[in-house]
Length: 416
Image (tube, rainbow, N blue to C red; front, side, top):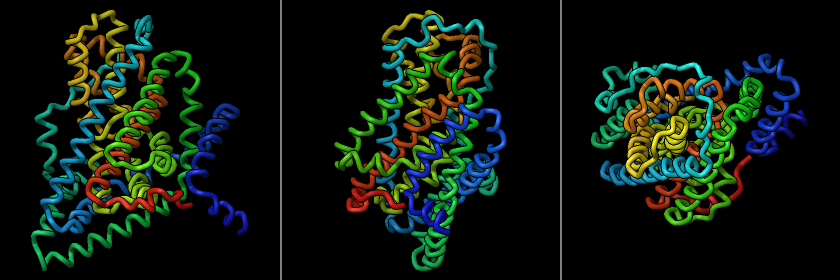
């Protein structure tokens, strides 16, 4: 029992970082044994994904009922979308700047890659129509984030507008939301084991190959991710949220490690919500509305990568890089990032929309994807981290602007 007590006495973020380091060491020292521990990672991801859809559906609706005035939702949503659009556009620019500096595509052996055909991209019309689901249960089963957000908003607004008859349902929503967050807390205790298994398998599968075969591209992804987090998000926190920086980074370790391990913004959502409430001091009506929205449209890592990989392809094919080309990549890259699904490697399949706008043929795009895809897992894990950070940074900024940030909790050290 003393061992168990000692384990839980260690702050969770330290246990998670320790598991991350052990997973890397395990993969290098005993790579053949990594399949034996893979089940822990699979169980962890399934448990997290199990919670995403009900959390989105319930917590947004519950958050709106606590706001009281539906008009306030419009101001909150407008601020959130505006900040997400800003960080996304900057992220594309960061990716393009890093690619221009490092030039990872020059001399890239694309001729040795097997083409990987891409499916038809989803049109803006289909994205717009899909926001309203034909079947709510089907949207829940598929985990369709935008559809769930729409349904949640309608339920929340309807509950508020109903007035007195809606109060029992509002209480039910808030009670269910509290129960879901307790379940998240229970699942979070398994994070070190899940992270250990996920990292061990990812590194054992292709860790070294990433740096041997696409070394310059990998370096560019890491550098772009660091710039987006340490410069862009820091400026957002300093000048919009007007809060000290160190407590923020100290508080979000759990969410960033889970983002890295799962390579999925949606899988990170339950953890991010717990971090926002317990560590950052963001009020529940704010984070329960902004974080699910961010999991759908707050894709800094994807935006940075799309900008970077677009220039990588143009450099590899020797295409001229004119101001018009840069402008088209910036515009289409930001729009493509907004429409990317919050699942691993999804950003690769939005590349066709960007490259076609600058004259790259589908056959050439297939070559680029075929070259990158075998090594994309660790690159995807890396670029999911700035997306998770963007989501929490924007949420903190919106909470500050709405007067819903508890600075005492924000400045305190994270709970164990």
